Image (cartoon, rainbow, N blue to C red):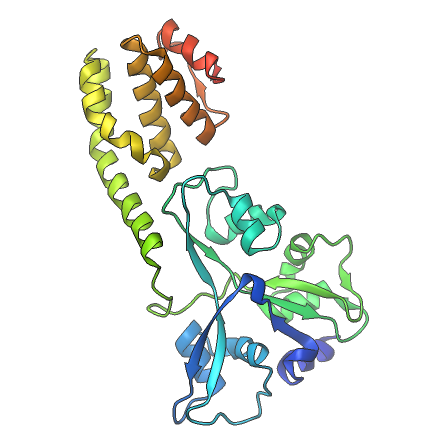
Length: 305
């Protein structure tokens, strides 16, 4: 088993064994320089010589063939996407990983909570993926995991990622291997387009301003200075989608409560609903807010304890 998979991965032409999944993966074109090898290119691109296999797979070449100066090779890369307002992990997983059911994996790959909403302007890394086709029958998922990750314990991740009900892969059957541990070396990630850069800058600016605005707004609220709360937070209202969920919730609740204080229930309801959209299970505590605020919050669909 080990020999079969190792030979398939390292020697056989890639079209027989695996191929980069173009639907969910980007590539870059590289021009071979004098003295280049697949291992050297992999080290420069990924920071890891052992990832030369990915270039082999993408170009369907034999590792034993020497590279020619001037030759062009394609190399798969992970993709960085910048979220827009309303983006969710489910939507991104459906678009880039082939199924919304892979949202928890996308969250894990990026070190974020699967239950949290995504602020606009967030950079999410989409891992490059490989489609592995079994050359022998059957292949253990543990051996496939060991071949790609160097660790058989990733077999369970492969099983769940591919929605399999067994721990083997039949001959000629395929599964997707998310190479989430492969990141581009510093400086090799393509620059974002203008729209993505604008969203990133917007998020950075809003996050910087809320750091100063929230403490001032809380102080004004405690002092009963509702006009002061509005003066501090109103400018952040258009930026709620770009704030972290916690900050967006704090701003939205304070603004909504302030609208209640000014007897503007319509605006208060609209603001509370934006908060609930970001945090459906957020709860207001009775001893923190007035009965009027709690009544409008509940009317908007919020929970109270």
